[in-house]
Length: 481
Image (cartoon, rainbow, N blue to C red; front, side, top):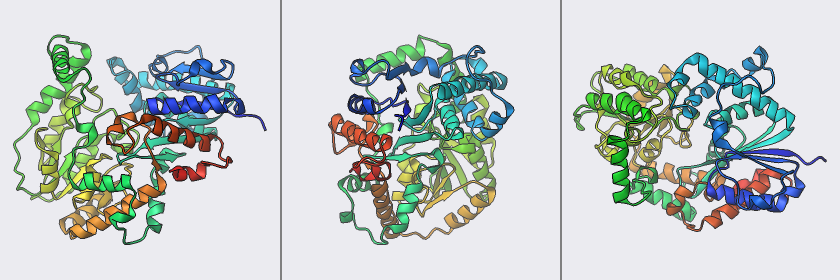
C-alpha cells in the first residue's frame, strides 16, 4: 500500500506543534509527503527530511491577494458543488483583509474566492493529498475553502475543537457533525448521575459553573505587565491613529456609546449577549446567524409588549477587535426595534442572567453558563450545549414562538437543572478527549505541564493517521484518556 500524503493545516498552538513534531520524528518514515501550513514550524523540524516534510508559513497564504497566474481552471459545476460553503467563505475573507476596505466590496471578495479556489484545487490534486488534518475548526477563509474542497474531493478529513469545558476537546470529520457525539452519548447516559460519578475534570467544571466564576477568556490578559500594558494601550488609542483604529472608533465606539440606555433589571426581559466578530463562534458555527442582527430582530418581532430585549456588546469588541460584523448603523438599527435596548458593558453578566427570563446567544458560552443557573437559553447556531433540555435551538419564526411559550411558562426546578447538568457533563466526558490543544486554558487545567497535553495529542494524532494501529484508533480517540 502506498504511503499517503497528508496536509496538516493550522496546527498552530504550541501544544499541538510539540505533539506534531514528536509524532513526525517517529512516524514520518511510514508516510508519504507531509505538508504543514501553520503560523510556526513544529518542534524539531530541522531534523525532518526536506523531501518528505514541507513547511509553509500561513500568514502570506492567509492574506493572499488577487492573482490569475496560478491554479486550476474552475467552472460553474465546481462553484455549484461548493455553493453552500461559498457565503461562509466570502464572509471569512474579511478576516484576512480587514485593513483594506476595498475587500468589503462583493465583487472583489468573489474574485479573491476564485483565486484561492483555483490555487488550492491545484495544490490538493497535484500533490495527491489524501488526508487533511485541521488543528481547529476551519474559520480563517482559505482553510474553510480547503475544507470545502476536501469534502468535494472525498479526502479524509479530521479536525479538533477545544471545548469551553475543563480539559476537554472534540474530534470530528465534519464541521456540522462537531457535537453530534454528545447527543449520541446522552441517549445512553443514566437518568441519575451523581457528582461522584464524574471525572475530576467534570467535577471541577460543575463547581466553577455553579459558582458563577468569570470565564478565562473574559479575564484581562497581561502581556508586558499591567502598567506597561496600560501605557501601550493609551499610546495606541490616543496617539497612533491608524486607519484600523479610526474604523474601530467610527464604526463601533462612538455609535455604541450613543445608543446605550439605562435599563430596569426589575422589568421582564431577555438578555442577548453579542459575540466578538470575526470569530469561529459566529462564522462558521453561527451559520446564517453570523449576522447577529437577524437573531435580535427575530426575538424582538416575537416578544409580547411587556417583555424587553436587553442587548449587551461584548466588552472585547470595544477594545482592539477588527470592526467585522459592525457598522455605524448597527447599534441604531438594534435600538430602533420595539422593546429593545442596548445596555452598558459595565453591567455584570451574571446579574443580567439571574434577573432575566432567558438568555440568547448565537453559540456563546453565555448559554452554557445560564444552563447551570437554571435559566433557559435561545441559541442560533451550532453550540456544544445545544442538546441541554433548557436550550432552544432557533432556526425559524415558529421555533422562536414555541420557545417563548415555553420560557414564559418555565417550570424547571433547580434540582432538575442540576440533574441535567450532571448528565450533560457525563456525556461530554465520554466523547471528549481528556486534555487541551489550546495552551491558554492550561491555567484552568488539572495538568499544568504543557508536555502532558502534547503527549496526549500525539497519541490522538497517531490514532487519526493510523486508524488500524493497536492504540488510539480513530474510533477510540476519546478512550485515550
